[in-house]
Image (cartoon, rainbow over all chains, first blue to last red; front, side, top):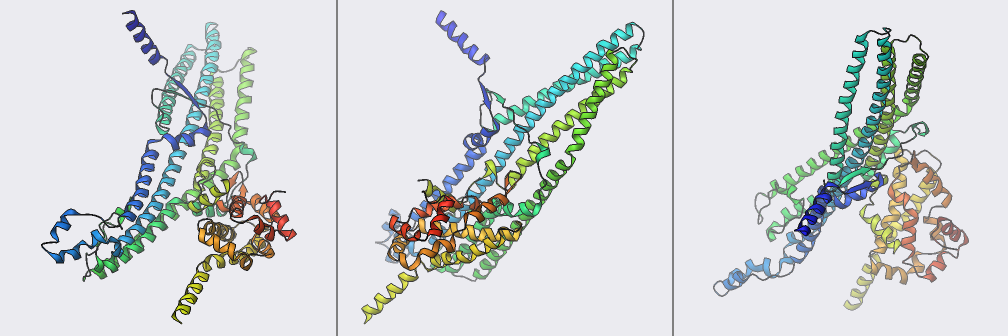
Length: 417
Length: 157
């Protein structure tokens, strides 16, 4: 009985003291890659695409279909139908499907790269936003302390009849408002940390703690120009590479239409190959060939339109990011000055109050609010710059987003061996 | 007669087999010159394209050599035909130009050039591995070439 009790106690205790995990911003990318649910699912799709290539290659070799063989003694002419079993490599469309599955595998890899980069960026931005909100929470608590001090002073002055009672009530109302803001922000931080755990595939039971980051020194940064960044953004965009691979695969669909008189292929194009399912292909040479070819051409035009639209979206995002980055750099002095003035003002009014000078408590409240607004604005500014830098890194595939293109990866890996 | 014709055909075909790759290797000379010409200029999109052409060219040629063992064997057999003392000076970028480019490619902590530029030295180290010691000695018989490769960190002292 005692043993059972101890076991139950230990079990309860283990739940009561949830496991704690501290992570840093540098770990986010690797964690997302290893355990993010969407990434893991997509990695399986790549695996399937790779296996489809092997399947389609082996499908070119003879296979045994007992029912077709049994038909032979009754109908020798049916031997012709057996070409797909005995010599599938004689059907050109089977070869075209192999080529298509190779290209769809590469397209799938590019899709994975885009998805991976987006998930990493989402997780990293959430990380910095959570830290920012935690920092806001600290500033709110400081404001609450400052207000409590003011309430103490005003309370004494009310007793001596130096301040009207409604001012004290007004200040108390303001303090209650701040307490509510603290509660709301605390809940938001809690939700953000739970969302972080989900993005990184960390079980919800684990208590996640975030390490602080070094915020960029905005004063040391120089303005950037769109022209210098656009090349790398386009050169590295997996979204554009994906269209290029799919368009290359389309050539083989056209060939399938031309060679349909030698039989249609029943093998799959592989993961993502469904994109060509709406292109009708005849099983044999017929009058529909012209239409099939025209539809493939039209499909190619759709891909071009989509690629062009994607290019414009990339450019639009990059223009906005560069513009924001430069405007932050330009305005940092303004933010610093605002904070400095608000702090000086607060210190002056506070000193006057301590020295017993007749300071309007509402003036004091205004200086506390000004200081809070300026502190929040400056803090937010620094985090916004950090976020913009992160988004820029994503758009030009720098830092954690660097992923070598297939050939480059192959060549450099050989050098390491 | 037929036999001779057949053998000649095989010979012609085998010699043209890697023609594209070797012609791409030769074309690197022009693109390297273009890179050196723009090394002192600003990194505009057009200049980035010039960089991409050369550095991707080096990567593509290296990929072809590294992934084709029969081409490697062919290269060993015909080494003197394609590689001499001048090859290194003709197709490899001088370290000073490369350092300048790397400096220009880094803006506010961002790397704005193509990834091949950053991994240029690694690519050269990879491709070096397909050559035998004797072949390397032939290439580096030229002092300027040896210095170039030493400066780039492709060769060790």
